[in-house]
Length: 114
Image (tube, rainbow, N blue to C red; front, top):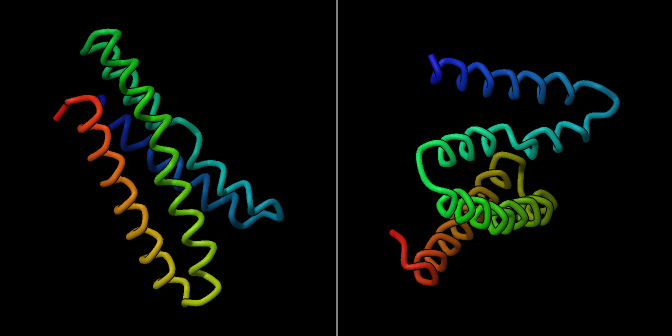
């Protein structure tokens, strides 16, 4: 039942983004993915299944996770000026993957967690 609720919540977010992108305030669609929908789920699961230290570590890692998202946005902004949209999106996702991999690698190195 919990998995179904999470899937419906994700589908609702996608629908909301689609609806907002068709309004005159289309730019708000860029704010919706930043609503902590999935962070709430992750924090609830970690907080209820692990200890307070694990929850705090997850929160700090989440703060650092803003960096790969910024890399994605910055690279998409730049690439969209040179490439067609599908290629620019692919390139930006590639940049996000590299930044996320680097973040995870450094996190594990600094915190000794695998």
